[in-house]
Length: 128
Image 1 (tube, rainbow, N blue to C red):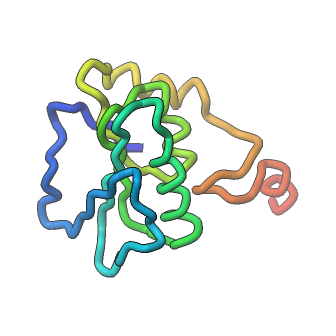
Image 2: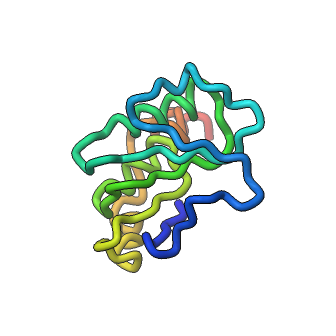
């Protein structure tokens, strides 16, 4: 997952067809033709509707472009964001980018399937 500091984020996707989606919108009603990046907004860290939006985009709608988390994004949310289908996250200004990678080092494997890897661990081992 690409981790972006708040000061390094550009709201304009240079050369990309991008779409910013409020957490109140239904992704199933959006036209995704030609869209290469979708920014999903977390207005508060306690509002997790963007997790559901990312999962819908990735698993049900088959969106293969970048899904970026913006807004009130904390380090604690990054692992679940990745599992929900996010490719990138713009951290809130008071969050340390260096500490963010430690989250992925701490939680590097999961038993359950997710938006990226649908099969649970036991099914993956059985197939191998």
